[in-house]
Image (tube, rainbow over the protein chains, first blue to last red):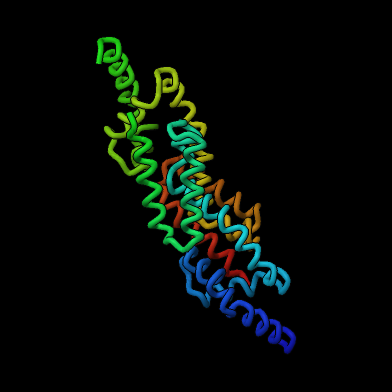
Length: 128
Length: 128
């Protein structure tokens, strides 16, 4: 690896290891993907050029609600319950997801929030 | 419960317990939701009228690919890897999901298919 490449690597790594990045992007992503922080850093450095890397933090922050909602949609089986069987209405589905997303963005553990969501969905299902 | 309601219940239950229904709808759904078959039958009977119930089987069959793909999208963290970071391209993402959906529709266990998917995604991430 020549001097320029080494310098670029250093600069990228410095960004990734800054407090803001580590806490907001690298940690959550490596958790999400089930890999170590170092492996996550390596993947980001290999796949993103400097400007993508610099753009990633705001992109990540604004995408978090959408990606978390997508995960809740799947984990709460809302495709079946709402889209297919219409046992849960779209309004109820969106309301539940929106509240859980807010809680997770505010620091609540995903699995804990998911369990709350499951109880709420089950309550709706068990209404006779 | 009056006589008509009892008759309706019997008719609904007969549909739900027919071989086709049990195998194609009630079993997979109760698995998906983590509840017993009896609880699933009760929920369906309480929430669906006769014509919705009769329409459910073909609806379920045609919706399966979409709902499975949605679950894979979330479980493979493709929102992050593809939509946000563009480390996995849309083509690769769709290709992986499509193949896995086919395998699951053909009887492969979801978790087994998901593990294959995770390996494929990780291979893409680790390309330098």
